[in-house]
Length: 146
Image (cartoon, rainbow, N blue to C red; front, side, top):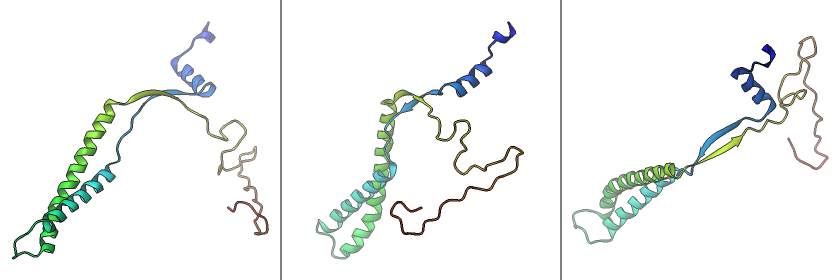
């Protein structure tokens, strides 16, 4: 009877080695923040150009100076508005998130008897073996170069 006892530790190990591991994940589309920040800054610069050059201004101020002043203010405001827009879209994507089940795929070479790429080879006594030599490319043959 003792051989039929199954513990959770043994069950977990048999699942990992015998079958592929399954996990439940959340999949959602999240916005990238940097493009929203850049676009907000560019819109702010365009608004500053309209303010400086699109309207008749005071004769005492140069239009370039007015543009520089408003470029800082409108550019910063545009970046802040772009960040707020990205945050709102990110929150909406959390609400639309979907659940999925994924299954782990074993890596190539992880089967018994096959060493992983870059792994050190050892002989039965435990001493390191030299790495196998790779054929040298003399440049005469066509094909991929490494």
